[in-house]
Length: 91
Image (cartoon, rainbow, N blue to C red):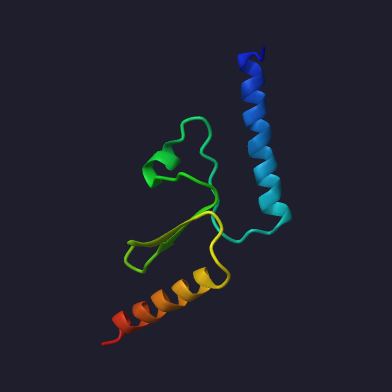
């Protein structure tokens, strides 16, 4: 049977593995470590990994992907929101 300290060491290793992957793969998006509390998962209703959120220029979540999105789907959605933001910025 594993001791409580073993569980802590396991979680720390997972966090370290994730940090190394971000560095190694040069990920250019924000990534968070939720740790034990799962506060972020609860607040953002994350049920699967990866979970991607597309937030518009006003701070509203416009799209959520659970799991891997289809090829080009994220790019198309971002381009559409950029066009909308540009139109909203015009006098």
